[in-house]
Image (cartoon, rainbow, N blue to C red; front, side, top):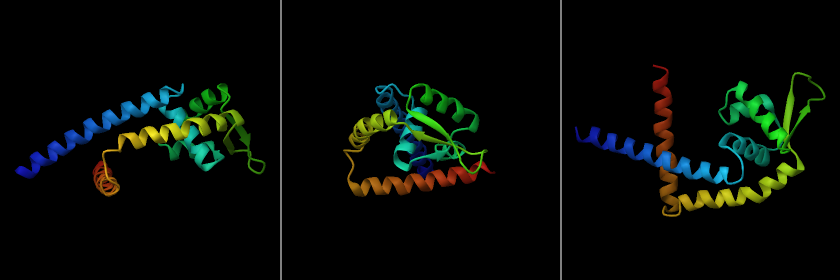
Length: 147
């Protein structure tokens, strides 16, 4: 019975911590005039380069119907361009504009510093343990979704 109480307590801590971290990260992104999804797209393009639009949604876990809207908004802001594939007209790539690249070059290190600040009370070993533990919990939760 004690295990159940510890598990419930762990779940409560996980959910509260997740909510608090999410607020800090979203506020940080908003300080740059971006929502979380826009930032995620820019971060992906900044770190991985040009991507097929269809793949962006899969990589940041966003529905394909939503990715078009997000890319439209980023294009309106001048941060990304759509580029048609030269060999396959069905494929359209998304890439950072010079303005988008300059923005990410400026803000990504600040964002990384904010994330580092969240974890500054943890040792490198604790962070590795947290990664492994959360993977186990996450994979188990995914397996239970199929049931």
